[in-house]
Length: 441
Image (cartoon, rainbow, N blue to C red; front, side):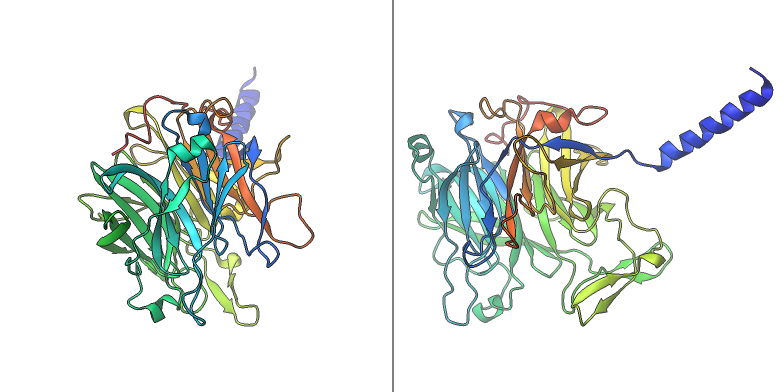
């Protein structure tokens, strides 16, 4: 080959290399295998709006495990792994004419909490409407018998998580996101506050055979940020609101909280001796640092993308939402976060500096439609019977299809973990044995 040809080839390779270095690979696409019945956020549908799922793993027959999903004002639904509804629990009614009713936002599981002298598995729910954490005991015998498995065991005297009075509850700066974890014989929940930056760490306690809680620590994430050019920026928000957190998950072995501040990015916060350590912003949304104005007529923020200074991240589009942790052996595994703005999910390493590994979307498949505008998600590594022998990823779908006219419909999608793992150019790990959610402490 001539010198000129070699020069031309080198130049071409340089262009290709530069392009590949600056252009991230397209997100992989996977398909869900099962979906739950669509629910509708209107009067005829009971104002049901699916949001966040959790999986309870059956101790003797994992294929009989159940999925618990929040429906906001409509309460909770419980599903089998085939997506069939097994139980419905209504949210609490308003305590007075001018008070807000219960509204269930997020849910998580704690295994083996000692309640009335017995090890009891609990589903813990953030009640945004009444600013409480609600606790539901999960009965394995009822699951086996096909009876409704959840029973309310919330102590009658639980106080608001954030509000100082019942009248302040009705202002609705209340409990929002929720993530639970255990530490030896103690159980905790982290709760975020709606339209605020606060996180509160609560320890569960047995109050005469019912579940109560007490505050252990509080953390306020930033509401404004100093950009690399020295200017100050605060995220886009309605008047009187601050950048809130909803999606959260705790690494059950390392006791690290991952919290998605919707208009900011994904935070990492270590939990040590029932205290929050210093938060670290491990990834930013693409819109981070973009100037904005508030359109009072439309009552919405308007981003000035033409003057985006380029300080945002590359992997999350606001809102950053549902977060979940896939546990594998020797500290390996993944942190998954919903990039709601572009209908994808970003995957990060669980260990080290949480390096970004790639993104994926849940698209249309033979059995279900795809996932859009996803809020909550949860992942389980252990085998769950014949349908999900290598684990499961469950995601909220904010736009369930087929649509019923103009009705707003939502549901949950169940995707085999191996479908996600094998969709990456360098496949993610499938580890069904190194971690058992029932044994985590």
